[in-house]
Image 1 (tube, rainbow, N blue to C red):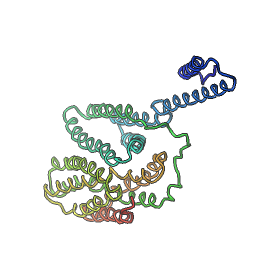
Image 2 (image 1 turned 135 degrees about the vertical axis):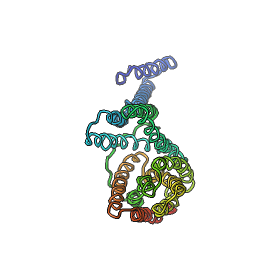
Image 3 (image 1 turned 180 degrees about the vertical axis):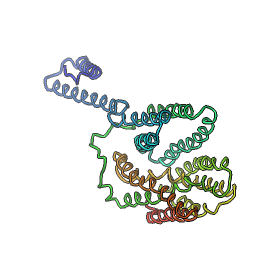
Image 4 (image 1 turned 30 degrees about the vertical axis):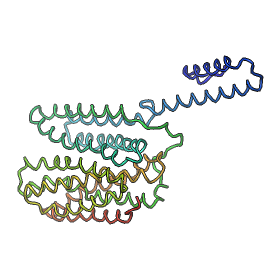
Length: 377
């Protein structure tokens, strides 16, 4: 009897194949028996491959990639509960800047890669639906934190938010799975050959430039409203208003991307975001700030939803994680640098007009770069 690798399931499959052959063909000659043995061996190999593929593709038995999601989820909750026991600025910086940063990168990247495995024709709307979660969280968590701090104090506020986050991350760990068996080809963390694709290089550059300005309005709209003389009790909700509007932008952007392509779908929202950034410093009334928050939320929501989509189209699906990782690293330079640069401009000028001109110009330059690829993706 031919044996597998010791797996009882494989041995059972071999025994069944041998018994089936002996029962149906008792008078085989030597030549046919040799063919039968070869067929059984092929059956064993196929059976073993199926069991190996299944075990490798399901977390937590999927190796380092599967366990990295668990580690990222642990870091997120470790940092959230860590705020409760922090007693110095450096510890808050460690929780928010280090652990939360690693957690977001480790969990977010693979989750976007999974979508490219499961969806092709409706990938845009799938990205939109998945991105709605961050808008919902951005709406609920600030309001919940504000109320909980007043009612139960800071420590229990962070514990409650941590348990809410834990519940969501458990769902992520249970549901995230790739569609097919893992690729046997070795992966690279960095693949510089991707930059030979001019569209990929332009998209990375455009993304870095747009994020030099895109987060400025969302970062400073509440403090600029207070600067304009509005009540802090109202301005606190401007970010939540923008996040609610962002939900509609994310779904709408996904629908348009499925019809026109992701880069084409981003052109008008990018132009709208740039125009609103120029107009934002001149807002003075409650109504004006609400209008800017709503429309800017829609425009930025489209961009945040679709900025990963072109990476999925620019190469082999098996390498999408590498392309997203490299692209997101470059884009992160703009996302990290943009708000501090805007803050420095505000400190130097004492107002928000120069900030709006700077951030709006960055977004408009990105729009120009996107326009070079209109109709191509």
